[in-house]
Amino acid sequence: MLKAIIFDLDGVITDTAAFHFIAWKKLGERLGIELTEAFNEELKGVDRTESLRRILALGNQEDSFSEEEKNELATEKNDFYVQLIQQITPSDILPGIARLLVELKEHQLKIALASASKNAPTILERLGLSESFDTIVDPTTLSKGKPDPEIFIKACEQLAIVPDEAIGVEDAYSGIQAINDAQMLSIGIGDPVTLSDADHTFPTTEELTFEKLMTIWQLHKK
Ligand code: BG6
Ligand code: MG
Image (cartoon, rainbow, N blue to C red; front, side, top):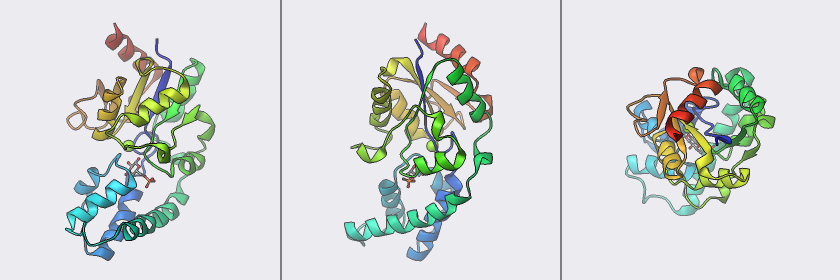
């Protein structure tokens, strides 16, 4: 029986990718590393430390900094990102999501957040959605980031359900791998080619309704 929907945040509940890009780009410019939008795609769903590692590797600067210096660089990016997300308001909730969250509650389904972002509680607050989630996984408690399934398994544990009773919703390739490896049904939001491993893909969040999720669940769980 379907008991819960577990959501990613960035790219599913709201679109923060542009803010992450602006902040990483600014750091990159200071370090002489040029970031393109195409490269930014590879950072979606990837945690802060791993994102910085990939950016430094792009500029062949991976060995140029000590661990302490890398932490300072990640903090520099985050300080700027935190300034940028202050402009987020409830109007930045992606289409259909607010309605879906209400529908899920009406049907007694549990709702969890499985985001790699340490800024997730601030973003939910700015969106006015803090009360909509039954539980939020704290990414600082995890030993591995997406594509490892740990974050989705933890979300199920926090909801006291098993993965077989949940659907995971993700916009990133790494996130779909994590949901699949957690043995949950996976819904991708975005490009069906990039997300071809998902059990089902919707082009945008607008198509996500309780009814459609139930139809997909029944198809896959028969
Ligand atoms: C993910 C984003 O949700 O969170 C990544 O898709 C980001 O781009 C990651 O790097 C970590 O976010 P934060 O807010 O902890 O730096
Ligand atoms: Mg995402």
